Every structure is written in structure tokens, then in C-alpha cells.
Image (cartoon, rainbow, N blue to C red; front, top):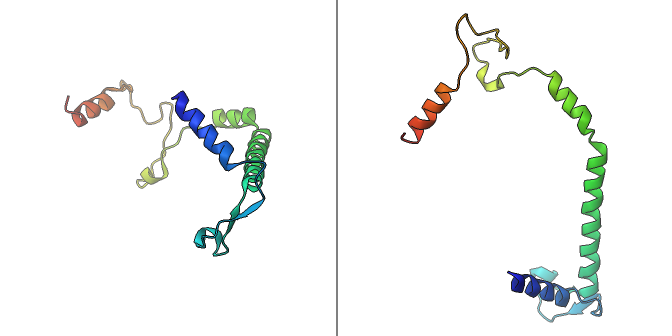
Length: 122
């Protein structure tokens, strides 16, 4: 495993060589270099990689700063449990705390376990 990491870092160092030119002529013309024959050199790749890393870290920091996690948690606690929109065809509401449960009927996980066993052949 360590060999693979070392090999990857060695290839990365070779590909993003700071002593290389900004653009280098390869002589091979293809769609990869828009038929110019030039490709990005080591400096260009190093700068582009660094800019991408800084951009991703900045965007992550911005998202963390802009998301008030405590407020989202409080909003989630205040909302009642609702049925899925696709299951509301009978126009019956759903109350999470005893509205649809008759006397002597309590919720258990028996049906869930029975269906699980039925599906998995148990």
C-alpha cells in the first residue's frame, strides 16, 4: 500500500514539475489539445491544482459558515411527522401520536420483521 502511495506521489511530482514550462509542444495534435500540439506544462498544472484545492476549501468553508445547523435542528424538531406525498391518495391525514390508533392497538415492529423474514426466506 505504501509503495502505491509513493509511486502516486512520484508521478504527481513528475507531472507537476515546477521547473517545467507553462506550455510544452508535444507535436501530437488531437482533440485533447484542440489540434494545436501544445499541452499544459508542469507550472500550469501545479497552479491549476492549487487553485482548485483553494476553491474547494473556500466553498466548503462558505457552506459551513452559511448553514446554521442549530437552527435547522430546531426547525426539524418542531415539524410533525407526515406521510409521504405519494401515499396521500386516500385524502386521509396522518398523525404521528395516536390519532389513527384505536383503543388497545399499539405499534410494534412485528409486521416489519415478518416482511423482512418473508423477503429473505426466513
